[in-house]
Length: 67
Image (cartoon, rainbow, N blue to C red):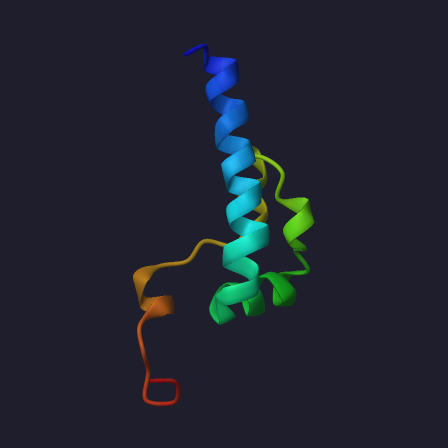
């Protein structure tokens, strides 16, 4: 598959995942996007991932306040 076509597919799948799954159904990422002023519509390509702050496993683990 040509590299350009592969990138188009990746971008399309990323857009769909962010808009239809990640933002609507993941409270952590919804809050992160809102706090950072990132709208799901702004994530159009793999290059746009730099808009999202880096997260680590520690960010997603349960805490005493939020089990």
